[in-house]
Structure formats: C-alpha cells, structure tokens
Image (cartoon, rainbow, N blue to C red):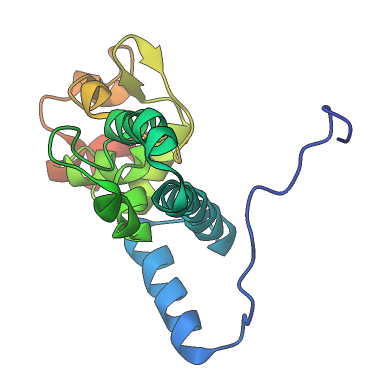
Length: 181
C-alpha cells in the first residue's frame, strides 16, 4: 500500500533508454509539443499504455464482461476526446498514439488556437494564470481538456493580455513586455 502522503512515480522509463532512434523520436516530441522534459512524455506514454492494456484485456474477456465494460471505457475516452463515442471500437483504442494524448493537453490547445506563438509561450501563459476554462483558472499545462471544455478556453478577463485587442500571436514584443519600454 504505502503512505498516501508520499507520491509515487507516475511513469515508466524506456527499457533501453540509449537507442538512437528512440532518443531522436523523444526529442522530436518534446520539442514539438513544448514539454519541459522527457518525464512529461513518459507520463503520457504510460497513460496511453494503461488505456491500451485495458482494451486488450477487454478483447480477451468473455462476451458478457466485454458488453458491460466496453461502453464504460469508450465513454471515458470520448469524454477525454481521444475517441469518438458514436463510431469507436476497441480497435480505435488500440490504434491510439502518444501524439493523440499530447494533442489533448491544455498547453497544446492554447498554442494551436493561436493564444500563444509557441508551445513554450503557451506553457508560460498557463503557469502564470492567464488562461481560464469557463470561470476556472487552470495553471497545469498537462491538463487534459475535454471537447466540452475546449469551447470555453480563453484568456482570463483580468489578465494584462486580455486588455490588448489582438491575440498574443499577433502582438509585438513591446506590448507584451511594457517593462522594457
């Protein structure tokens, strides 16, 4: 069991961490999605691995167990935005990649919607509290945004970035850093 006050590791490291193709793939994903370090990538890979393990267990289960558990798994993944509820199956779950999980992160969505110029700037805006989902300020870049919450994603009203008419992606450096003027 362990002490509930002591957190556990939420990721599994690669079995062979020094393969050159794996290193280059990890580095590409870290740079593309603006991750802080490879540990964040490994957390997403572990999360995906656990989802796929559940799908494989359901494929091997009896028909009645599968009939009960499959809709639960598919509805949970549909709420996360990883699969579509109507036309999804366990084969769709098994075909998910780590890029699908990384695309649902708050950091990636802020960058893709044009609220930030780069994924690193998106991370900074989130951690500094400039981004809200609905009325709730979210300061966790790895937060998985559901499709329902995605429409509510915006810059916070009291933020200095909200006073400017244009989005941060079209502003000059002077308007973002008034201290330098």
